[in-house]
Length: 101
Image (cartoon, rainbow, N blue to C red; front, side, top):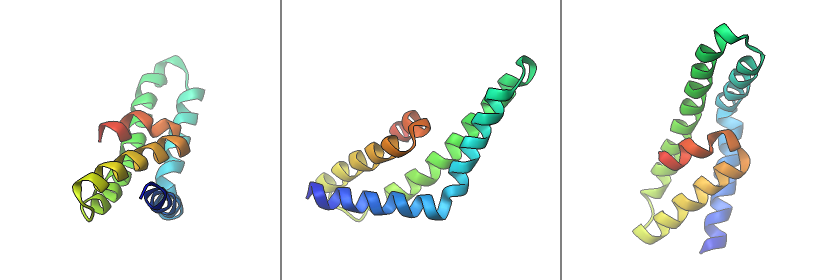
C-alpha cells in the first residue's frame, strides 16, 4: 500500500507543479523581493511572502483533502502523511504551512 500511495502522491505533486506552478512562482518571486528589500519595505514584503505561501499551501491542501476523502480512514491518514512529506521534499518553503493545514 505504501508504494501505491507514494506513486499517487508523486503524480499529484507533478500535476500540481504543472497546473498550479504559478503559485509556486509567486512564492519564489515574493521571497526574492523580500530578500532584496530595504529595511523599510522588509516587513510588508515578508507579509506578501507569507500570503504567497498560504495561497500555494491552501491549494495543495484542497487537492490533498479531496483525494483523502475517497480513501478509508487508515489509508487516508497514511496518504495525508505521505502527501505532506512529498510537499516538504519538493517545496521546503511550504513545510510549516502544509503540516498545519
